[in-house]
Image (cartoon, rainbow, N blue to C red; front, side):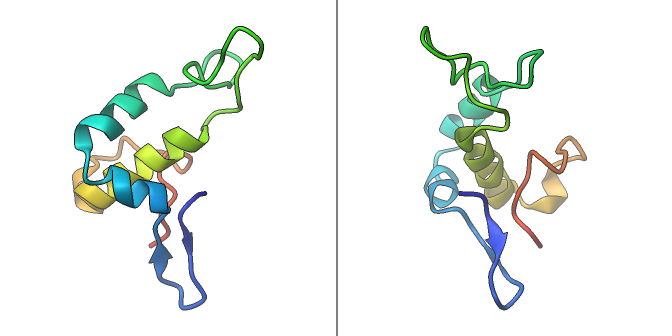
Length: 89
């Protein structure tokens, strides 16, 4: 569900990211909680029966895209890596 460029080279946002972009308190919390552990798995996505999913998980990607949609590229202060922001520009 990552945001990818469409056939015209324009960015098409992840639908979940579009919804989350209107809820900054939600995407901020998702970014705080969905972080990698020492094995590269999402800490928030694990449960008692699994070790978790590889990071970045779907929710982290959607939250990072929502942050980008909300703040734009000029407001992100270089803290994002290529894996943290998936909207092509």
